[in-house]
Length: 113
Image 1 (spheres, rainbow, N blue to C red):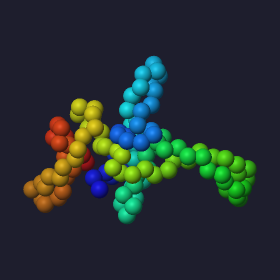
Image 2 (image 1 turned 45 degrees about the vertical axis):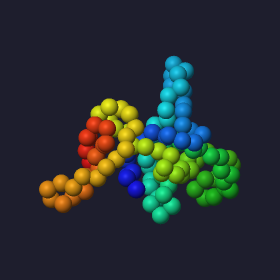
Image 3 (image 1 turned 135 degrees about the vertical axis):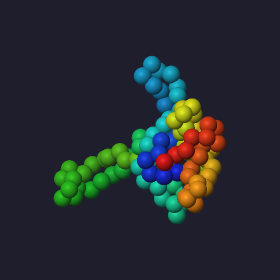
Image 4 (image 1 turned 180 degrees about the horizontal axis):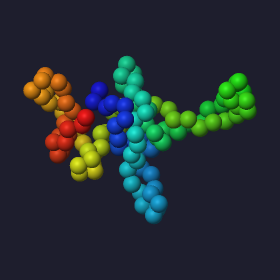
């Protein structure tokens, strides 16, 4: 899996693929990766795949009720955002002189941390 926690990704498939900006234009949905689940190949993206959950009252949440939470989506439905050209990109692996693996954008050659 080429996606890490903290990356900015673009949703390329699913119900949350497009959103409206402040002017009302339809734009691709972007978000920050909050958590990665490599065993199930899923990622939790900020503001994407919002589901309603019925929560019982607990000591932490006295009221309970219906809450909205983000649910994980499949990693194949998101693509890493290249900050150099501000477009989604495929990612390759480059090995530097110390033998360390570095993620590299296939569009612009940008090296992700």
